[in-house]
Image (cartoon, rainbow, N blue to C red; front, side, top):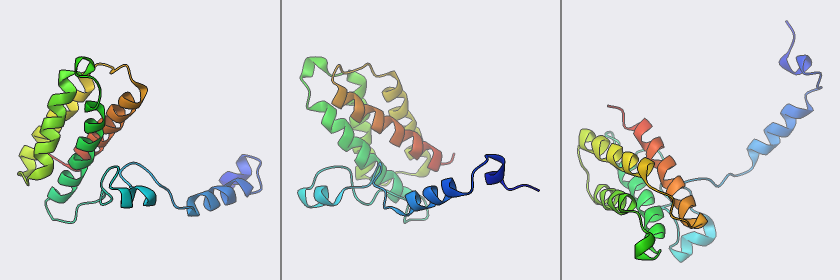
Length: 147
């Protein structure tokens, strides 16, 4: 049986480059950069798997991050704000401050997802980027909160 690298005609350099690439530290969604940690800017540094058995910690942290992104959108002029984004922000703040049951957290997270999916463009590329990030974070959270 031939090795996959042989079928591409390569000598394995490609997989070595990929291995080296994966060794670098990666900053991604939900991870606060070091310079932002001291400034109190950005989503929470603790975004990740839940510490608790019910996943409440994950829900609170993720919704705190979603709320932060939607707060950045709220800094726009009031006439440009979409009411769906404001409502999603209110729900995400509510979820980030308490520990609801798993079913309630799932329902409220689904409401945030529905609102963000139907939200109109803000007209500002930075604000749209924050909305897109919040959408993806909510989608990821829905995957973790199993029904």
